[in-house]
Image (cartoon, rainbow, N blue to C red; front, side):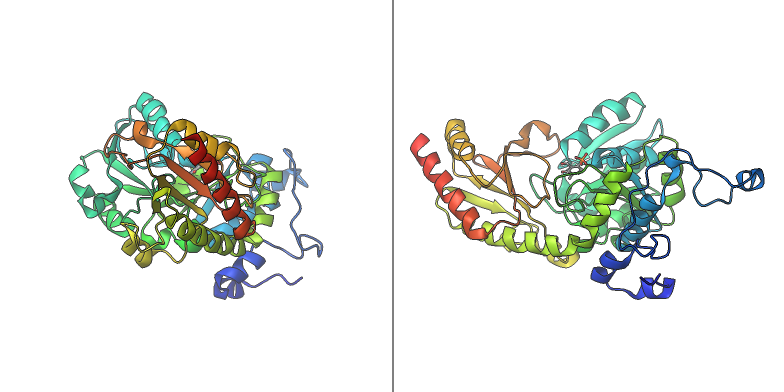
Length: 395
Ligand SMILES: Cc1ncc(COP(=O)(O)O)c(C=O)c1O
């Protein structure tokens, strides 16, 4: 296997990057994949080398050839200056917030954020003396009116991973940067393949690698990529928290990376087909999918995104909780589970009314979130058609 030159790496298109970056033929002795290097101690050949601080690897917590491979590939794919790897998506969120904020600062957080992000703000950041204001995700450039002299960061999640509001990220970036604030984005739904975060003005971009980078529901991982302005501060903050990602997880993530675009494109195709089928069902009030023309923010999706993932929601016509449970409990192919992005289809009922303070969640019926996997779409429709029969019987 050839080791690619920096010029070739820079020239590659995204699918070729996914296949070829982070693979060093010479270091892997010709084997296709970088192995999972496990280890704490790294030995130095002599005292002079130890004192020189020039050795590439010095201690397991600061990186291994395995973690470096994923860092190299992700940094290029995200269009970033650098990337840090941490054990979970939630650790990535906490790391980004702790990089940007200090005691006495003010944070603007989207009301549609992943609920644990909210809990981190309300509990941990409050204890540290950081105040959070939640804002309507659809605020756009009017976010400017929410700034205070001590506002140091704005956090976006576009789309929100339950309710799927899209945010005008470039407009929010312009406002944040004009006021010297850091723009942080949870980009897990789109991944950099469908929304290159730094090209849209994001300073710190979070990816829960647990979802589509893994693709197989078998690992936990978080990534934060940063632009040139923020990378050093991110690296220093995370390095000293002592939370490196485990080498087995990173090895599996590298494996997932190679097929990520194929899986995402297939998830997108399947999800759009299922969303279309659901939209025609008499039990469904509406489908909430940003890539469908009937989504209120579809124009933003068309402007800024190059694809959609397998995750979307539907609102059912009013039905009792028992009827919805009867529908979901008998599903054979759809699992009931939270962590999405795997090869298997999932569904959860949700109600995010209790975790909104700047907006109101009142969809008009019970809401379900689907993560569509790689099963045959006709089998998925059959499974759901039977579930609607059960719902009708339990009404
Ligand atoms: C949008 C989003 N961000 C972050 C996370 C957190 O990822 P992890 O489960 O790896 O902590 C999740 C998990 O569901 C998520 O949905």
